[in-house]
Length: 624
Image (cartoon, rainbow, N blue to C red):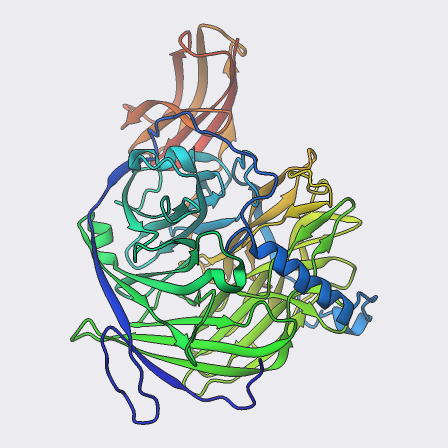
């Protein structure tokens, strides 16, 4: 449905309250006290049975029956907007230079997780937390494993038997901490929301873990599709509440917003959470509410959200939601503004591969960033002129007097795009508005990979930089109709202490036709390193004898500045087998190390040597 003029509906969430005579409304706020459930140390994760279920069709967003209804919408869209060869002027945007590509390497071990659901966070000290369905990894910015675990083993201290999925992560540059959120269970009697935060700035150390009820009203509903953001003092989590065993037309109950204190979360104390419900427009709940990220480490007490009519064949309504935390009370004031975009969006077509096709899901908003008083956001859409899958890039120019302008972003060739994300690349939010936009790509003659483009302060776009080329088409589910999951989201995060640089994560097709995740560091055109490089040049070192069944020895140079040296033995999946050494070295400079491996099973292992948390040497060892 389209609205011919924008207006503002004011809500209060927390108690019945009338703000204005024109727009009286009620709100609902439910308190939950959540005790800390467990602590997990990522350097000593217990390796459990780690049940692996490879579903022929992984759960679609908002319930299994959603997919059939969405296929009908896609068929209608294809009839209305058939694919045509795009005109060059409509697809090529090369008014500015493309982003620069720096470090890039393989991300997680997916272990047959479909879709990958890539997400990452990057700290000011250069630790990467990369999460996908089935796997959790901590890496250095030069690609070396610091710790790793499956989602099942990571969450093992919680004793939750339901499958873990939909992981999201954020880095908090104000408090120098990491946060991870994931879900467990697909039914009202098994659903749980897992929230965890590091106890320090070391993601390979201790994580405090909490569990929120996925069925908070104790009815036949479960929680799906989490998204997170932060204000100065709070963590906000949005989820969709879904009825058991109902089609998507009636199965969606509402979107909920959980509010948690960052201070309590980081302290590992009980969380006095607030559950915000009944977020409605004209009596109907809005759906798939996407939190807006702050562009830099400067955050306030306001939190912003966006939503749209994501199942429609064509629509131009964008819902803008703003909550304001009061410093004097727990009451949140809120407004919902239905805005009209100058360009419509619509359900995207699925993207054909060499064999089969990749699911693009719907036209929901997937990522958004607040740059001073401007919100930029991205999502999937159909390009109505060409009938192809494209990126919808929207801009709310002034949140105090909001209106929406938009562009369709396409490639100059036959690559089609999906699952975009966005991050700010400017130096100053008062003067800059430039961003890097990431999107997965695929075509019948282009294996699944991903690309990135740059938009400058004038709103001009670069062409698409090929960040990661796929090796083959994706064929994990072996469906007769060729259906394959592409991923429900990708990730782009600014390096907060190095303006102009971002880290990104998305999906590519491997040689064996599995979907895997790839991590890349990008910089804006003309980027100059803004901080002193905190990493050391990690060198591959020789181990002898190699292979061996009894003992290994190696020679290395311990950096002169080293105050603490760690020697980690990892298995081939990046999981810590043994912390061999963790102490101040007696002397720096050239040294010879040796260790007994007679108790290890035959196989390939990785040896990492780090100085003050930064890997300076690594080796591959073979035990026979």
